[in-house]
Length: 374
Ligand SMILES: [Zn+2]
Image 1: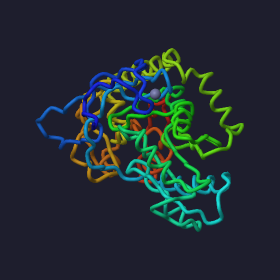
Image 2: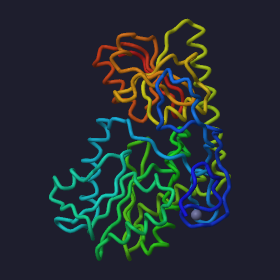
Image 3: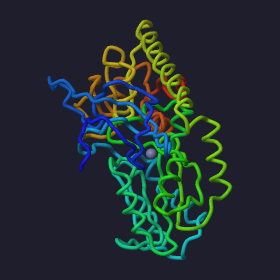
Image 4: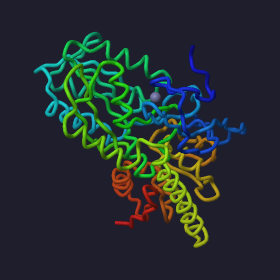
């Protein structure tokens, strides 16, 4: 039976265990991919947004079924386009693969596609059995990941490698990245929970390493047979040390979330009190959760700029902050710009400076940090 939007979760999406413990509650939040016109008088629908951990496989996941996904309006960042080539290079260097591997990609509109980077290096794209099956930020968006993983495993040729990239739950936890929690992204894998899923499908995780996108991702390779290497064992140890495998360990995420929310509100109230003009940059999914869970609206952030023309004239759902184009931001030249897309803060700040915006930038995570004008 298909999952029903808004329904409370009763068992783990991956392993089916009913031993679920809530680890973070962000309240009722608007769906982060639905950007209504700025003047639309309709209230934005809200849905529960909270994380729960499975006591059996340790998978951290949303504790409700997400609302249906809307059309993507995002523009791929320069950072992500470069990443596709760099990560492909690392995978080809590091993993034991055939000379001209047959490759099949399961991608999503959130992570872009790596297939062009692979074929540019001599790989052959196939739609059936592949030497390398890539899951690029894809299965993490699924309400039925067990069936989806079975599909990926079935696509593996003999000796084939399943390669996945996902936002690492360890980084979410230690970096206080509560704004990466959003509707439509139900799964937040650690290496523990992904290894458990692979094992149930007859695969062993053989290698894993960190990738520096989206605030901290993990690249994981799994195959039939083989054994975990030292890097895998190290990351598993790091997860245990950080508390990423127990509900008690998530106390840290709750504390970091509360402190970032308080710091950001205080910072914006002080700026307003001092008579500074403030705006934001970014209207991605993270900004919906960050502002929504913090309760920051147009009184503290009058507008935000985003690269995607499809979002201009619209608003961030839930909090009603209007979205303008980057040139509009440059023209208005506020005293401060809060970078809501903190994971690509360097790219955004460099871009805005090139456009002639000389101002103070504020990066909200992992702690509110002021980056002076150049
Ligand atoms: Zn589970």
